[in-house]
Image (cartoon, rainbow, N blue to C red; front, side, top):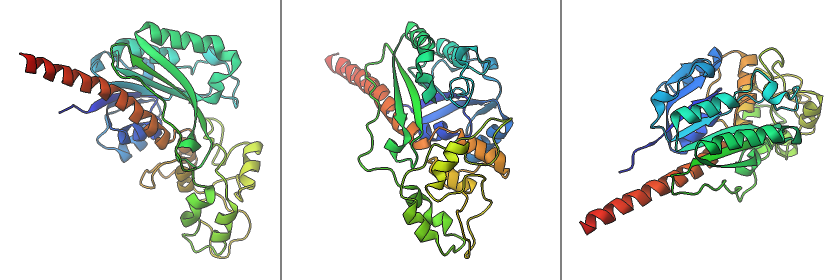
Length: 328
């Protein structure tokens, strides 16, 4: 019987990547997150997880050397088009810490995700440096831009995913293929939530909100309140019949007129979280957690292919052992 595959995750946020990897069959032995509100969210949703609320700079990977996967969504502001794009010169860049932990833990696989801006030509040299650093530690690396809508998430949300497989593994990693069925529209995704207070126009609204959503944004701790982003994003939401200037506390009342605002629960569903996943009572904090998350269905799809790659190696080893015993 094969043992469960284990995972250490850094920069765990509100648990989007962690939830997806758990659904893919990985058991987390440690989740490292710096912000206390995010840590509380992780603990509340998964009391059995070992949540370490600490700066990743202070996290020692040596006790976790038998772990199968090191994963993380390192902070995106250094590479985001919404920021100054300082890259390696941004103090929030944690790629060096991720590489340090690869060196210390020596996991069988590595999964790191970031924003599309990481692929910008201005970061080509730094991107090459990061991939080569992981390769020099004994890994075969791949990098690809994945669109969340290809995996059932009702928004585009492009994310860069780096995967490294240790050289001594027999399996070969392949990025997950896009779903055959298109992602549901915003209207299909949110109709029941929009109608929960008996809004008379809920069905009409859902039929007109017949596209996937623009990328949700979470904002930083200092900037970005409970809204759906800057002017360009709000305009895209308005085309779907959504007022992006703020976030509502509840669904529209029966006689509501005009464009409704999303609730944080609606935002979470757009991001691919199950309705059972909670984000606390503070609306601004909840919206930031949701908007900054990695969609769980995308993490699950990538995680399942990593698991298949690693289990292929395990199955081969078991077969070889059985064959050896048969000869003896």
